[in-house]
Every structure is written in C-alpha cells, then in structure tokens.
Length: 258
Image 1 (cartoon, rainbow, N blue to C red):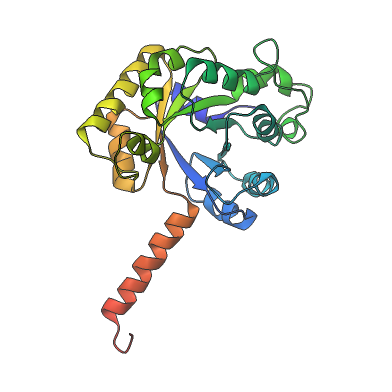
Image 2: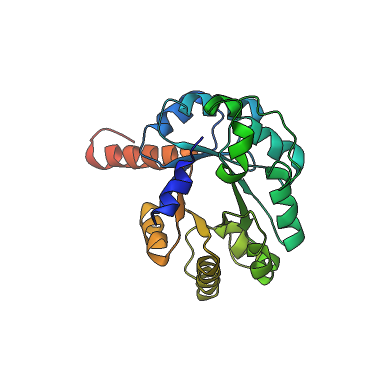
C-alpha cells in the first residue's frame, strides 16, 4: 500500500492535486486521466457524500492517482470512514489549536498511535488484507488546514504534533479571518508573510505545505515559493472556466450569434 504522494515528497517533488466537488464517478474517472498526482474528494464544500466518495474512488482506481479526501469537520466517525473507504490522505478543515491537531491525528491512526477503529472495508483491498493495519499509520497522511488567525497564532504548536504529514492552506478562509474578501490567489503582503512563515516552519520540521489555488499560473508560483502540494480549482470550476472560454470565443469569432 505505497502512497505516491509520500514518494514524490521524499524525492523533493511537488504534488499537483485535483479536486472533486461533483458527486459523480464519471467526473472522477475523467479527472483521474488528466495528469494529476493525487485527486481529493471534497466532502466539506463539494456536493459529495460518503457513497459518492466511494464511487469516485472506484472510478479512479484504474488510474495512477492517489485518492484523498477533505472531510467536513474534525470528527472521528467520518475520518475513520473515509480511511476505511480507501483514502490515502485526509485534509481536515479548521484546525486551530494543538489540541485539535492531536485529536485529528488520533482519529486517523490505529493504536498505539491513535484511536482509529479497525474495519478497513475497502482500504484493505488496495493491498494484502492482512497487511493494511501494519502499514496504514505510516502510509496514510494527516493534513490539517491552516485557515484562520487562531491557527496562524498556534502554528508552531500545531506543526509540532507527531503524525502530521503536512498542512494545507485555505486562502479564502484565511483572508476572510483577517477581514479580507475571500478568494484563492492572494497577493496581500500580510497573507504572503503568513505563507512565508508556514513554509519556513514546515521546512524546519521536514513536513510539507500545501495550498489551494485558482489558476495554473498561481499554482506554479506557489511551487516556486516552496509549496509541495498545489490544488488547481476543482472539477466544477474547471468545467465552468473551459465552457465560458469556449462560448466567449464562439461569440467573438462567429457571425450571427447574440
């Protein structure tokens, strides 16, 4: 049960991550063939539930992408279920304190490292059923989101929690918590200073930093800054961008359209 995201990080490479908001196995199958290193099912703000997550994982399984999930909240029931369903990484929103980070890790890890209940109904199919429990604690990634003023204040304490593989910045909520308009690709000096701090502190500890972006150019810029996981928009956003661009080009170049 090797985790390709871990392999890429160990080789010093950045991970390009896709994002699934649409609850469709077909959408997931299409996205899985587009060159992403990993693809994350969004159960927080996407239109996904547990069964649609499983369908997305099934559709992606034939393709070389690492399946991950953003859970709706830091709660042991859903975290255990997404891991049992086959998630190789869990991104958890709104982790603001060391205590919350410790709880998150405990929900993700089997004893003695945590309190996860045994029952990997789909996850065990990815490798030998008898071997999953031996490797899961090392191979599944715990990735708390840093997206509030409080989380920034407690950053070092959160990063010091054993078992965290990296952190993931939510730029919209982060800016929102500082009184700014919520958006993805941020240039405010105050926010860029926070990014620098996150990158410096994660590098000190040998863990990784990820970020959600709204454009390919900002994603490339983020990799240049030092981020080692970048997400580009989501499936519904990419579909809308491509559709708008196509419609606009037709209206620009063709005669006889409104």
